[in-house]
Image (tube, rainbow, N blue to C red; front, side, top):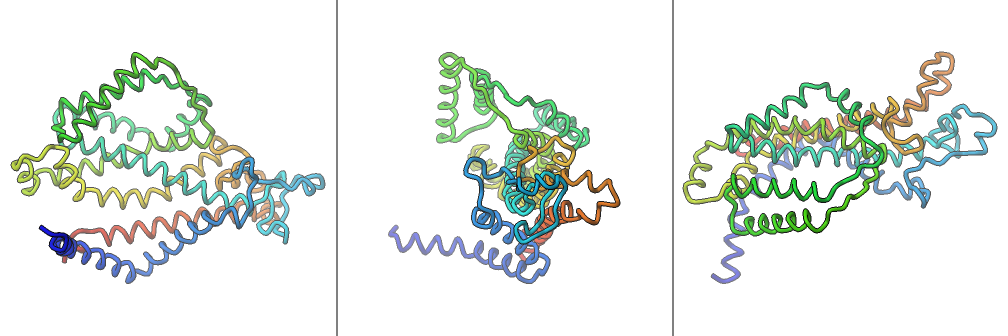
Length: 370
C-alpha cells in the first residue's frame, strides 16, 4: 500500500471524530456561560504567564512577597491603595498586588497538581477494582470508603500537621513496593509483549535497587508541599468511585466482549475500549474540582497551616487580614486586605465551575453522536 492510500484511509477514519470535535466547538460557542468561564480561565493564564512582567520578582525567591520597609517604620497597619501600591498593603507592609499576581501561579500549581495526581490514582485504582472484581474489588473499595468516611478538610488538616518537614525515603522500600506491583501485573493482568518487556525491566531494576542501593534520601517538604500531598490523599477516592462505576457499566458491553474474544490482552481492552468510553465523566469532575481544591488550600492557609507567611498565596493574604475583620471600626478602612484577594479566589473558582458545566454538556456522548 502506497503513502497516498494510507493517508486517504487515515482521512476517512478521522472524519467522524473531526465531525464530533467541530460539534463540540459549536456547542461551546453557543453557550455564553461556557465562553465566560473560558475567558476567565484564559485571563488567569495570561496573568500567570506574564507575572514576571506585571510584578518583577525577587531573583532569590520569586514567590516571596516584597515588603515596603519605609512605610513599615511609620505604621505597622495596612495602607490603602496608592500609586506605588495599587492594591494597597497588608500588615507589615506586604505588597498586596504582588501577592495577588503571583498567587495566580500558586493557584494553578495547587489545582492542576492535586487534580492530576488524584486523577491518575483514581483512574488506576477504579479501573483495576471494577475490571477484575472479586476480592481485589472489595479490598480496594473498602479502603476507599474508609478515606471517604472522614471529613475531607478535617483529614487534610490532620495530615498537614502530621507531616514532618523532612521525610526520609528509603530507596530499598520503594524498590520493594515496585517489585510487588510489577509482580501483581504479571500474575493478574495479561500484558502484551511490549508491556511485558517493560514490566520485566521494572522487576530487574527493583531487584538491583533492593540489594545494591540500600540508602535513604532526605526529602525536604515546604508547607505548601504538605498541603498538596494532604489534599491529594484526601481527594483521590472520589475519582475512584466515579471511574469504577463507569467501568462496571462498560466492561460487559458487546464490543468489549468481542475484543476479549479476539484475543486482546486486558491492557489492550482497557486502553482501547474501556478508558475512551469512561474517562469523560472523570474529566468533568476534575474540571469542577480544581476550584474547590484551590478553596480548600486557601482555607488551610487561612487557618495558619497552609503556605508560609511571606509566600504568594491568596489564602495566606486573607489570613493576614483576620485582625481587621474582627474589628468593626477598622473593617471599612482595611477592606482591601480581604476584598481584593477574595475577588481573585471567587473569579478563579467561578471560571472553573462555569467551564466544568460547559464540558458536562459538550462531552455528553448522547449529544455528540446525534
